[in-house]
Image 1 (cartoon, rainbow, N blue to C red):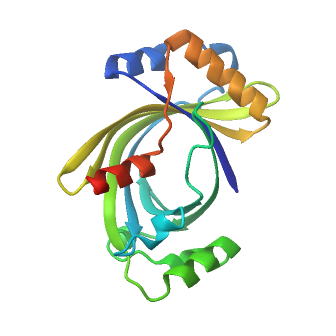
Image 2 (image 1 turned 120 degrees about the vertical axis):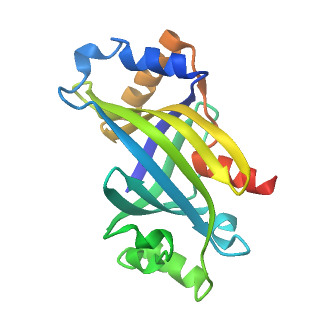
Image 3 (image 1 turned 90 degrees about the horizontal axis):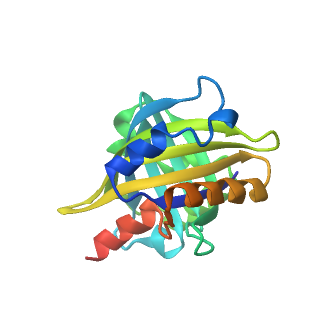
Length: 210
């Protein structure tokens, strides 16, 4: 599937709380869609960062009680407005053991997964960095498009280096990019947010380079 989303920086926890309680989208918010998740993710690569060199991200993420393996291909922002479009493959994983022994063969049913398996071959995968954050989220329905708005608060951890996570994401589930941009413009006008030009993965890589 193609993941399409906008990302914006949030300046403080107070601003995040204000956005969460604001009524900007009250008229189009889906009933009973609000939720809160504790999320932990580990990003894996070979010793020589072969996946990163090929613009592939492999993560194992625990979302509440659910564990999911994800491949993201060509992981980057495609413009300076915070728009991200990338191939994403998600596969449910049975338990937490994959955090210690990640297995790319869970993606072998997809063409992209088989290409990554061939790329990595027998090389061992290492935990390069992790993200730990709380996500507050709700869905909106414009009539033509359905999106999820998420507020993420936490940190990226790479060895002894840390970087904050404080951002708003608007992910398009169905509908048009025009609607996505319209919602993004409303958020920017109301809260004065700036686009986030780097994904959590890209910021994790930057920590490693330090």
